[in-house]
Amino acid sequence: MATATAKVIYDSGFKNIWIYGIDNEELEQLSQGKNLKYFPSSTQIPHFNTSNNLEQILNNVA
Image (cartoon, rainbow, N blue to C red; front, top):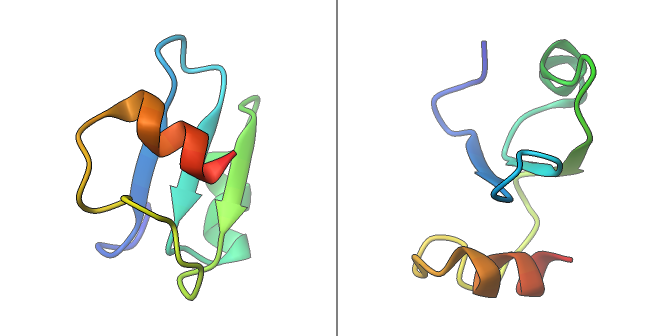
């Protein structure tokens, strides 16, 4: 179970899922069979909390 502070963004086909603000142990539990990309909670992700444009978010994260 992800912590309350964890955030997730994903592409339309759920082929790539970005996890932000969780530790490696939690990531391991969530990553079974999924292509997850992990960012520690200290990572600055532009527009992560401010943009509703998924494409813009993914372009900034990629």
